[in-house]
Image 1 (tube, rainbow, N blue to C red):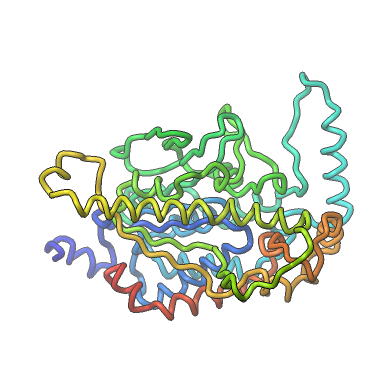
Image 2 (spheres, helix red, strand yellow):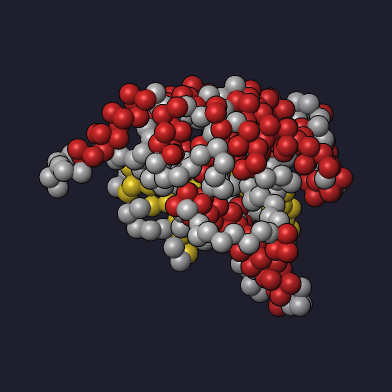
Length: 393
């Protein structure tokens, strides 16, 4: 039961959400992250207006880090935060994420080729296939990072974590912003580093390998947070989560007996798509399986023995994944890709009838994103009762 003080705060539309231990984990996936917005939009249907976010702990990786930060900025009003996020995705165009004009693409690729001939002592800049500087401009325009600290101080938000991969050390780095009672942590190949979250952290976390350039923060160079992320649930647990709500982007797979026997070897495009799918989805499923085993083991230990080991605790989780294939949806909008990108993808065998999932990651088009938002909304509504029970709504 809520205390009298908490009841008074709830009437005013303000409650100290730091007392809650619900966490939201948003995974990566490029343009696929629009699906997350649809799920969140459905959850707003279960939460009263002018109510704070039901997840005081928010963790984001890659494109999920952008959604996570936007939510953190509006933690005091969950409805408003989701509406603003939904508006951005529903009006998104490719040129807001990366430069897609033919002359711009050719010029940027040429700069990268010439830069490879520079001497070691030259002041080099990071290069990649695409120039995502427009994304930085978009983030600085729509995300007010100062609000994150305000929401933490007012009790609407407990912590925000953004995960990036260090190309310098090979570690997965969890940049987190919270109250000082959360101590930095260090485990095998992963670290928690207290930071004031800013645009550089989001650019680094969402820098898909080779597609977008790395970002330098302090003395290290960082790229997409899904790379080297062996334990996607770790940041939420370190930040105090006891119940974790996860919005994934793993696509449904056909049963083996329904798959056709393809006599041809996979193309480069197909292999590249499998690599991206592995980076963005496989580690999450492995981490969930490991957590379920730990929960099962803890259930066999008596309470007295368990209380003597401070780091061990049972963690509940709720995972929602798309019910339909992103690749099939993306193919409907293949011609929405800029001509320069279609030509670029053609060089590695990706066309409107290829099996590669790369298109579903790079198709930052409002029509495609609106379809993913609708899919996420419907998937969440189908699980309304379970979501309500898990979030105690």
